[in-house]
Length: 295
Image (cartoon, rainbow, N blue to C red; front, side, top):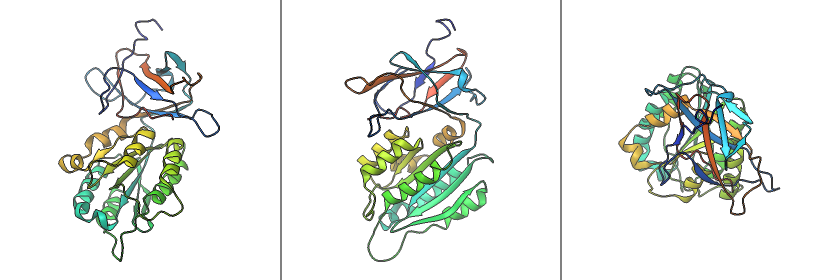
């Protein structure tokens, strides 16, 4: 491959103050010091903007601090998607629940016939509304039948629900996986699971989490959850003012690249990651927040 053909043609599309074609990433290590498998979500387009979904791992190059990295996991854009929709049905969600259900129903209507979705709700406990299915009518009914939990108190087991959702998706390592969490980010009832444990489990899971933050402008836990899993946070006001078309398009068409850094960690724990395509006629986009912290 010539230097010209090797030029970077994968740009970041990020909602923070990063512009250009690379990101500086903190290193992600396990408790025993081993560097974790990092996930990159990448979309590829032709010059006129049409998605390209038939590439293989051999068409991509990952560089970390200018050092080529072997691609250790690859999931094609055409491979089936397994999406778990985790919906907070606690009383604190009451004011936004009707509009949220409408937005989520429209969102689920945009997936393909080979994509499988499961709906899980939680309040004081965790409830499976429908298992993974391709049946859009069943999913629509499951969502529209959801109601805010009634009863005394407002116990919310957010962390326990996330643990269950991540474990269900980790059972399918051969599929592209994603977890969409709709919640205000408040946990008032998890007794066995802490926020730090969930963030660590999420970072190791190779599952991308897309939190939809409802009835709040900021939530540190939800922000960390998105960043640590190569996801993106969707604030409530954005969900109310626009549909989730961009997220649905991303989930339908993205490739998943996984690699474990082959070089020793930097003293400051930062790494510069780039993705290249071997075909210079194509444009590649490293999708929002798909640089996950590795610390």
